[in-house]
Length: 221
Image (cartoon, rainbow, N blue to C red; front, side, top):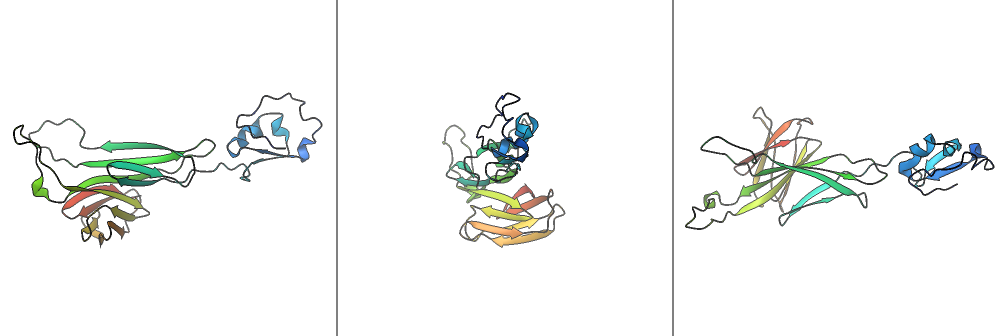
């Protein structure tokens, strides 16, 4: 028997009395198998499986991929129709009580994918920062000379299984990775806007990624 309704229908207790339930198989939406198994008279079927042959196992959304281009973040998942739940934090947004503030201009991004009938995906993380192309051009308007332009590249840093990938840096930019003990654990040179550094840093540790003259802290996944 096939039932395509996600929410278990209210059914008379004797609805399947002539159906030889114990020897029959009920096919229902994958995400609703456990509910059908717990509500009579549906639970009296000998076998209850998902419509997609999942055998009752709830499918998990694919972990998202994170991209940045032209001022916009974008997310993709191999799970068609997935919805993305994201969080962005900026350590610069806080109150200070000093005459000098060192700005990091860094966004920490986390996102996971959801879909009805699916288990939420693993969380994907990335760090987005801006690397000054010409630091001497930095400045702020004093109200009379107008705002100065700052030429900078947006750089996206991601880690997976100790591998750190950097996208967006100028070709030829030297990129090094250090542990919190100050020891270098890997390096690469950006080619075609991409660089990948394999490290032996364990998951949960902090890596310091040096891109040109700029250093950024990144959580290793």
